[in-house]
Image (cartoon, rainbow, N blue to C red; front, side, top):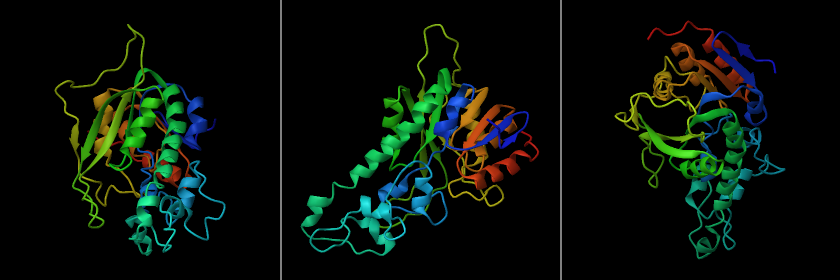
Length: 295
């Protein structure tokens, strides 16, 4: 397996993490920010590939439809039309300019969108099982989620054999409220789980526990730090998490623009990043070539 980029501390691989995780050596920590899947709740602003919900999810193993160009297949599946008036049965489609049904058919069809969330759970299971095998016994998985899809991620992690430990909350300056049916988000949850270990095995423990809380405040990246990625996290947040878990080796299977690797390199920690989109591999490689930040 040839790395896209490699130096003393960091290796970057271009490909699907479900195929590559089995080919890398086991590590102490998997720290990652997988797709939030807000498209499954009717939102499109969190699509990872610019302007294409279908592309961002199809490349990550989710088959939407054979005709994604005609009707936005994702919206057709999670927002079915009313059998009486033909309008959408919930308010999410209003973002796409569709009118919302308010007739008696709503109560009959409203439960249908949940099938998409079941598929999301199954997709999470696909990469989390591989992540489980890529960890040393007693190693930790820390994965970010949105408040609306946190449940599916948490269940998939637990169903894959992990022991759930906590939910760490990243508190930031807050996002923007989308409409009258949503609240302004001021935090993002990070699920922490641990791979079971045998009695007597030496495993990494938390730095500063039990006095350290599960709330971390860090502002969102400013214009100076931000790269060309729609859901980038601040490097300072990931440095804090790496130090908290006292990890010596790390994998980020959804590397994005390389924030996890940048934080690890700043701390002198070895890290591996895997990313499906080559454009982000290139951005991350450029970030790795920068001089390490003095802490």
